[in-house]
Each structure stands twice: as C-alpha cells, then as structure tokens.
Length: 274
Ligand code: ATR
Image (cartoon, rainbow, N blue to C red; front, side, top):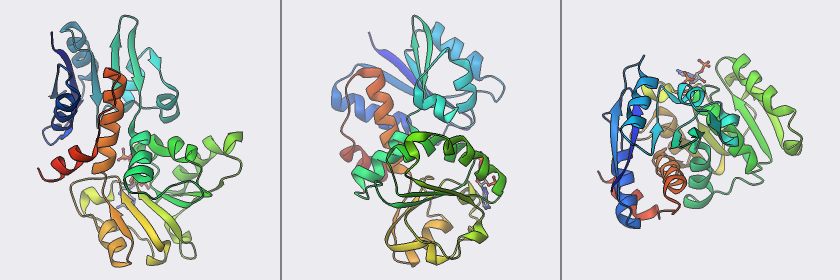
C-alpha cells in the first residue's frame, strides 16, 4: 500500500514541495504519495482531522498554519517547542507529533551546501517575525561568534533576544537586538533576511557596509531576486535564496517520516530549473 503525505497551506498552488518529495521518494524507492492541499483559513484543524481519517501518515505545514499546527499536536520535538511553530506533523497511534525542520534546513544549506560555516562567524538576522523565530535556535546551536537580531520594530527584536539571553549554553555568543539605524558601523560574515519585505519588492534600510568581505547574503524567500539580494550582489557578497533551505527542510521531514535521508544536490538542480 502507498503511504500518503501532503503539504497544507493557504495559498498552496505555488508549492514546490510535491515535486521535491516525489523526487526524494523516487530516489530512495519509497512507495508514497505527496500532494498539496489548500485548507480554508478557518479550517486547518478540520483538514488535518479529515486526512488522519483517510489514513495519511503525516503532513508538512506552511503559511499561515505553522502556529496552529503546533497547538494542534499533542507531542512536540524540542525544536518545535523552541520555534513555537511546526512545519512537520506525523500522525501516530498516540496522536499528532509536531516537529520543525526549517532551522535545520537553513543551517544545513549554509554550512554544508554553501560552505559558509556558521561556527565562529558574525551573523546578522534581519526580521523578528515567525520566520525569524523559527530559525533562531538552530542558528544559535551552530555557535556563531555574534548574533545580532535587527528589526524595524525594535521591541520585537528585544523580545526575541530576551527569550534566549538567559540560556547558559549560548553565553559565549555575543547577542544583540537592534533597529535598522543601529547597523551603520557594523559588518557581518553572514546576513540572513527573514523579513517579508521581499514579498512586496521593498528594499530594507540597510547600509552596504553590513556585508563584510566574503560575506554570504541569504534571503529565506525563494523564487525571486529580492531588493535585499540585489543590494548584496552589488557589494560583491555571495548571494543565495531560500530554495536550498526549502529542499533541506523537506529532506529533514522526509527522514523523520521514512527513516532514510535523501540526497539533495541533484534535486536542487532539477527544482531550480523547473
Ligand atoms: P513571517 O512569518 O514571514 O516572519 P511576520 O511574522 O508577519 O511574517 O513577520 C514579518 C517580518 O518582516 C517582521 O520582522 C517585519 O518587521 P516588523 O516586525 O517591524 O513589522 C518584517 N518586515 C516586513 N516588511 C518589512 C519592510 N518593508 N521593511 C522592514 N521590515 C519588514
């Protein structure tokens, strides 16, 4: 029998996840299906319940349901708890297990695929919304020398920082929260854009000087050349969009479900060309 999986979101038509998981399944010879499902904005829980009743094994969850997915589950991985959100649900006889593979996907793409190891680097995280929250703990666990969270509303960056400042295992990392106008005299080895500014083609008020020599500028958004990416390119930084993160978070979810880790490089090439 074919095991059934899906990704749930709203909107969902643009999702590349079915293509990615189909490629993983073929490569690892897993008998499974994976489809994209549009849930009504007020119908996430009902959609999940219906899928469980139809014998689905698990789902990925995307915007805007990641927080709701976390709340719906009765078991949570540590990284889901750290993010307060879930992108991977596994249906078991004990109920719904929530995990979050977004941060692990981002770290693996930066460290492994792009070969800019985070350990010991000065890292700037732009944004303090759900996307930034979701990747913060895995970024810290990769032990940068500095992690600055910068956000338009300073308060949100400060709240994020407060949550981690007391965690003793990160005491050696220099942590700071700031607003955009405090970036003037700082430069970084890795700059990650976790704001949603790219969605509206808005530029961020960031000075070119934040991009140090040999800097990696990473936009968590994929499929468009955002003003952030264009600016970074102009300064000579290495620029990446979030496609690698998308594929690596999918590989992590696939591994949780199937117990086998797919190889991602060939899939990355194929999806990039679709
Ligand atoms: P997501 O789930 O994508 O993170 P979100 O939780 O609404 O969405 O957060 C959006 C983030 O992008 C926030 O950090 C937001 O800044 P504010 O907290 O100050 O609102 C940031 N953002 C969105 N548009 C922006 C813009 N034009 N300039 C700067 N920051 C922007």
